[in-house]
Amino acid sequence: MNVLFYIAGAVAVFCTIMVITNFNAVHALLYLIVSLLSVALIFFLLGAPFAAALEIIVYAGAIMVLFVFVVMMLNPESQAIRSRKQLLHPWTWFGPAVPAAILLGELIYVLTAGSSTFPVNAGVGPHALSRTLFGPYVLGVELASILLMAGLVGAYHLARPEAPRAPEGDDR
Amino acid sequence: MITVPTSHALFLAGVLFLLGLMGVIVRRNIIFILLGLEIMLNASGLAFIAAGFHWGRPDGQIMFLFILAMAAAEVSVGLALVLQLYHRIHTLDADQADKMRG
Image 1 (cartoon, rainbow over the protein chains, first blue to last red):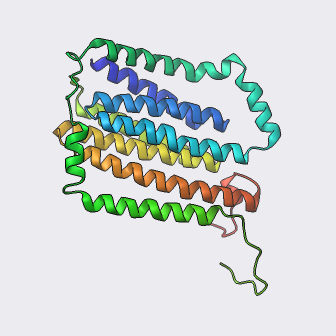
Image 2 (image 1 turned 180 degrees about the horizontal axis):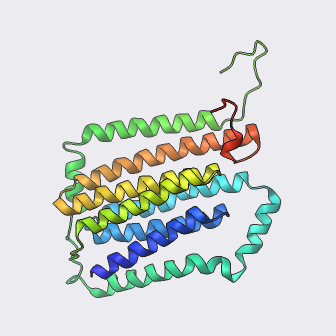
Image 3 (image 1 turned 120 degrees about the vertical axis):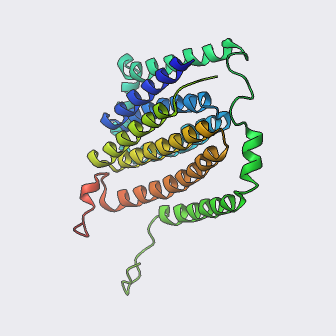
């Protein structure tokens, strides 16, 4: 079973290297999504299935979609069309597709290996996690909710189009 | 059940963290700097999960949940700042935002 961990780790490192050496932002985002998926598989192997699910939902889902939104908003139209044409070229999707196929192979192996190799209640499941999260750590949950609220208000305020500057020139 | 030594998982977390740090230092595109920050946060979360795996306790996963909430708040504010910066200086190059001569 340990070889699954090392394969997923190699995929994560390879995809992260491709992220920081890529010049196209959308391609880098695709590689980063594959890297996050392999890290989620590592979480599952380390006995943290709930954290693995959250990694996929929040990191590879929500946060990467935010990045894609901003990249698409900031791309000039010509570059957007060019990257759309590039996407049809085989070599563009070949790079992220191979690590993703390796991860798919590992996933199929984990699913078909049965519950004797990967017991369902191995590690720390959602039940024990939530008992602890809403027990001793409930103050942290409240603080995290306040932080998310502050992030929401701050992002709304910062992303507004700039108001016309006041004539007395007060520097906000 | 998997029997990987905890040190290997921590080593992987360290490698990912260093790669993210290299991305932050080397790249000048501000989107890639934010991506490097995400990689570093994710690597620290992996270190917490590995520690929780080592002790068999849920505390590591709880710290990962807090890191997740912090990363979500950070990336929303950061991307709003990127939009605002792009509207002001019309480029994503971090070196162009040098009005403070830093």
